Length: 196
Image (cartoon, rainbow, N blue to C red):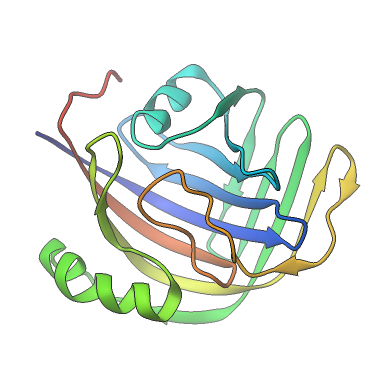
């Protein structure tokens, strides 16, 4: 089995109309720095927005999507502010004070100790296996709850930010129930070789 790591930021924001967004800005990965948007629509469609075929192939080899949109995509995040701009999306997310800083810990701790507590307290699974058979460990380094954010969809501002009450269902885990910006290291063990 192949073990790889990706490091960066995951930011989430949801709205009462049912639109939910998870923005990844990855500083380190086997395919270099990249960004992606996982978008859950009000009718339950799961969309991946990626900047190129390589990113789309990598992300969709792990997670499930109904549709993949490859388009000009720009993402940035420093752990406090996250931005993502695509053809019909303009996302800005601002985090508040640092909610927690976690030390480096072994993968076994994340699997057996951290996972049940994170699920109970935040609605997050830190360990699991995707439908593709890919085993993953999510290790948060620090996080901020979102204090402000906006999304323009087709030039129209979405209204009424809300918690993630409905899952996106692209993988075994979901973002925190409360929107957040999380600095994270993900360890990925795949039963197949990625085609980088």
